[in-house]
Length: 110
Image 1: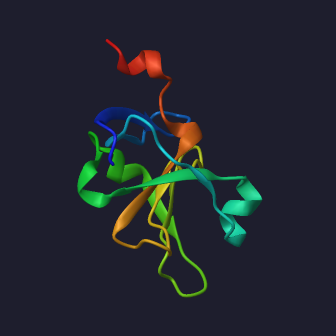
Image 2: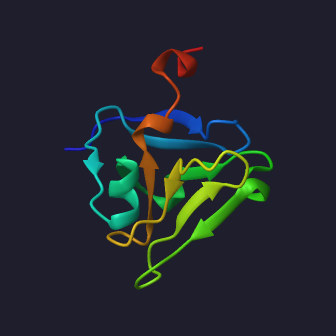
């Protein structure tokens, strides 16, 4: 049974990359074990790509790193270097949202 979808916002450290995502009110998050994410201790949850939207001019501040099979697209901010979301190899039609890059709940309650 799916939880109700709620709006979450988030982005990178310098706030040049901003996004919004509709995800269940109760999520399951994973520690990614790929070599890139494990070095950063990335914990993420995955949503279908149609529930994820970049805001404003965020795309102008994103660059992408790939390795191995080049299926995963590790996006990060060109300014601060934070990976707030990426396309995971395990689910290339989805978006993996970095849990620690989601705005605190009170930022979304206004």
